[in-house]
Image 1 (cartoon, rainbow, N blue to C red):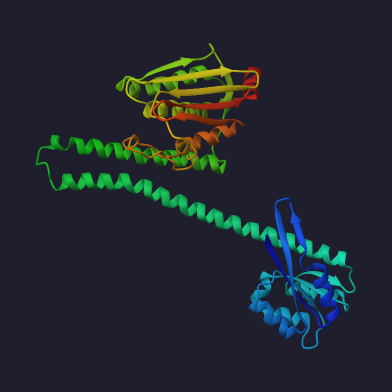
Image 2 (spheres, rainbow, N blue to C red):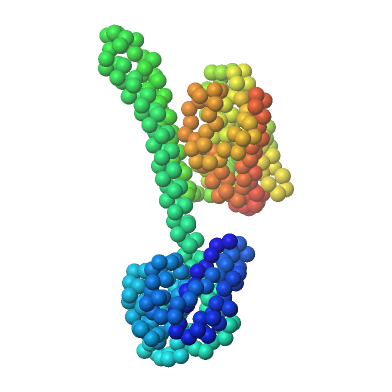
Length: 380
């Protein structure tokens, strides 16, 4: 349970005791998710109070305006920058408009005139506590964003460093003429460098796509499209790579299946699913693409007879830069962004993407889109 530390600076023992009795040990609940336990300290003079603020870490300061050694305004001035980190609530029997204005100008958050009831004290404390809790959440969110940004840049640097290092190595070998003066001898180095450069280009393109999606700046043009034709185009695009390894691709779908969507987004999703099914398949394998129209949803299933994944590996999917790395995937190039982009695209249609897989037996990805997209396309 999080702590809420309260300090009371007042020269009246009865007032200090009353605040402690009312608040100390109280539990404040917010939004059914956050709980604060109130801990109360007190001081009888301004000097003692200033020392406790500087040496301790109070969140809320109940500050009497009129004290034997100094007034509340002078205490705020003595605290200097530390006062900005506090919620200061002035308590006094000598309330006036001038005092309230001056206290607010110096950094006071609220004003509680004496005498006040326990309920009034609890109300102003809860109000201040809610502000503190929101500030803590904002700080936590800022730190999390900073950590995510750092991790993103770290992983991106790592992903780019590997292909760059490989290309640099091949160029050094050619520069040193390790295979002699015959240019043909270096063709394998050139081909491998080209593959590495293609890997970097794909990473950058995928990164730009993901950035546009997350920022909401990706332009979209929704129109009725035939999902079957889009699937046929994606299959045609993947066919050369499939033929090279004798992998068959089949399609099971209605004669036509109109969907209200952005053509580029649908192409990106289908190309990603089908190309992955080929890429992570075994030689002489199969890829089965299935489109199903139901009353409440449209389902796109892409199954393969490939290397499959363990349960632990499946849990890592759909995250940025997440790639399954093992002996079977060592020579398969990818950015680690494709499935995270696919997930975000599915969410644009209020849809979802899921996976079922078993090592050595294959993988099935299932994309589901609500039938409302189908109804809109029919109406259009």
